[in-house]
Length: 209
Image (cartoon, rainbow, N blue to C red; front, side):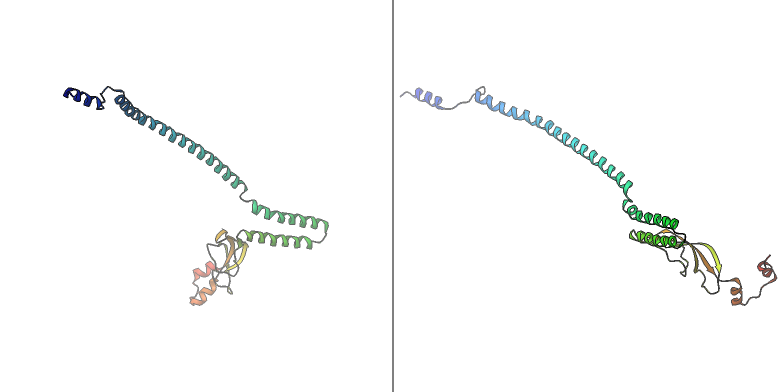
């Protein structure tokens, strides 16, 4: 066999892919397609995030409106429970007034008012309201409001001797201070303890006009 024929057969058996062949073009077009798809994915992702943000913003606005409505409703009806407890007291007052009109004696009215007051104080106690103890206690500026001073030999100084208006506590906080009269030591007793005689000027000041 001729050597030239052997070389020809060998060359024909080799798989040669020219630069311009279809296989080469197909590979290059695939790479270009992937390159084009990569930038297109970013706008889609951004659009999805934008839609998610808009949905969350709308849900938050709805929640805020509902919360504001609930707050308004709560402020309007916050005292509903205590008001329901007070209604029976109003009923008893009406019964006491009606009974006093039907009966010529005032005993029925007095008893009705006393029972109503007792019920009212019990209702206040359910909500943490209680009366401040005043008479016989030491004067406490945080609980008492002194509106008068009374000289007393039998009572220690700064002791509450009379109560003009009850004070009330709401749990541990003062709701209203009590209006009271506080005992003072008489001036004559103070002078006797010090054994200091009155001068003419002091006698003229202490003398009644």
